[in-house]
Length: 128
Image (cartoon, rainbow, N blue to C red):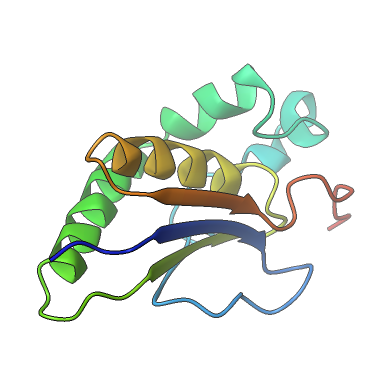
């Protein structure tokens, strides 16, 4: 059975509640936040240094691979249905957006139809 669509949504918990999703990945507590680096704070996942910093974080690549396997498990189910994977961090500009981009690329390589949305990527940096 094939999933009709996989939607990957990045978001920031500090902007609003998580979007409705089948699976929510919360990156806030387990993975280093580029926001704490003044050189990266006002950048976002649009910028290569942010993507490099996030993807170099221990455990992130394994999380992306494991989430792709999770999508495969949903795909193996007996009912065809869309799957939404929401990826959240504090502000939605660094970790969540980078992981969502990498996950969407990986899922698309399997032939899945993937729609990537960044709810908060272009919002201002949250002061904290």
